[in-house]
Length: 206
Image (cartoon, rainbow, N blue to C red; front, top):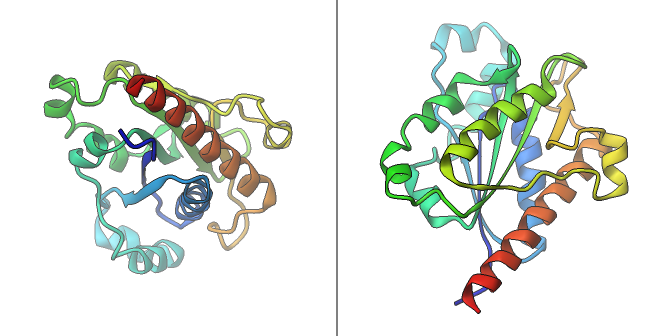
């Protein structure tokens, strides 16, 4: 059995912050030897709401060619990183909608025994960073997944400050812009996920 880790990065982003984090994680995971699929969950908001926000509209158009995930992407993966902005301290409806399509593969046991982790962002400093990740991880418990948080396993996490997953405080007119603190946290999280998934995969093959 090959020990190349297959990582699915499945996220939702309206204004682009999540896309930047996902791209940073994908680059780090590929540099660590993983095979990566990036998938952006389908938009549910009405077009009028999207067009009312120029940043949202621009990002929606710019990512129109990013494939939407299917349950098969999770079946394929050894590890999955989910990403969602905070919505009232919870995950976005778009990601929850995707979770709700997973009943068949969940019932088949195809979501169990994989590594899972998550990231988030919000426009307020204390607007639900941790509660969003914990809510996301509730579903992983039902999957029978193995949650691999970043914890405080590297010095960059004492700067980022969130042991549950990478989180970003999006500010300013360009909400998609992320700084070095977030990029470093994202890289560390992706590398850790790949490393743990590889160890589990190698052990199962022994």
